[in-house]
Length: 437
Ligand SMILES: Nc1ncnc2c1ncn2[C@@H]1O[C@H](COP(=O)(O)OP(=O)(O)O)[C@@H](O)[C@H]1O
Ligand SMILES: [Mg+2]
Image 1: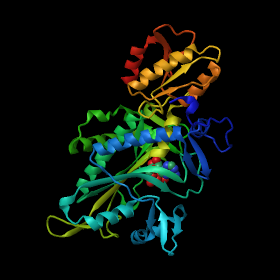
Image 2 (image 1 turned 135 degrees about the vertical axis):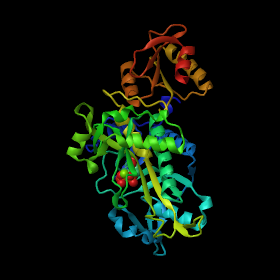
Image 3 (image 1 turned 30 degrees about the vertical axis):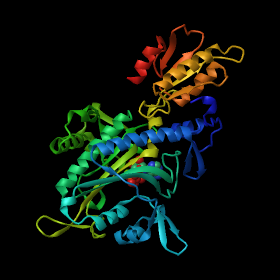
């Protein structure tokens, strides 16, 4: 892609409500544009990053046997009346009437709808367990949308639902998701801590929020440093090992405000190991048993003849929020570096040139065609502009590798820079090796 052809409306003027780095940067680099309070359009650059995050999330869901489907954004109020949440959900739910006067709503989440689908099609324990997910827009009429796409009203979420015959098997589904979340965030180069979360009236210890550490986060975080030493890759993907993994994580103190008790923290965690900081919730998983299957009558035949309500869990990841969360975690000293797995381009070529001397641009064009031939996603900065302005721009765009064609370039060697490291002079073959590695 040529930068001159790309639709990235870079802006310098920021609205006064853009208070955190990710919001500012996403506006400055034309990733998003606000269209109404808490509602955003995703412009090509932002959309590309979000789609890459979505692909990582999808792959890790598929790996644990969850199956993708797609439910609509608009739902009927009837099923919400059955579960009792139509009134409970309050003003966060956007309620709509269709032309026949039927009560509809823009889905804030999908427990009711998925339970309705399940109850009408699954009757026997033989069809269990199942895990289903979709990646779809949600709407929650937040009272105070803020921080750009981090806390907005319309957002893109992966939500999965598990169905099991009994609690033990439901826990195994929960553990698989727990594992899948750790893998997902690792591929996004994020350090996410699973934190015990409130389970509400159901009780038990089976709800975790996945929090990434960032100063601008909305949640206060209190944790034992040892939690970072637990490496999910040391566990096998079987029920016993995954149960042990979750227990090992749970044995390290890690909570947000809701569950925080000062004396508990101080007596459980040695002074040197105490982490007190802020974080961003990027995922939330929940086991809730028959909370929805019971009122919605989602029953299956049990092997011993009786009918039982299926045991369910739900598992969310804020796909659109992750775009901002990654920026909060990776933006440093006015320089952005996207994780390679979600970077908008693999590499950018930055030639220094002007209309009286197009030598460097020609060299850049040659490298561009070599790299695109081998299926790299390359951006060529073909805009005539002074080189320091170019560098500033690319500091913001955050493409992880740069090839700089300037006075230093030799016949077969180019200045190559991985963002955050020193530049070096190497051949195109070596450059390709590094990028493809
Ligand atoms: N208003 C929002 N804007 C952007 N992302 C959101 C918003 N609300 C929730 N999410 C994302 O969806 C995930 C699942 O949401 P959930 O836990 O149901 O919401 P909440 O924590 O607000 O009750 C959250 O972990 C978060 O990443
Ligand atoms: Mg939550």
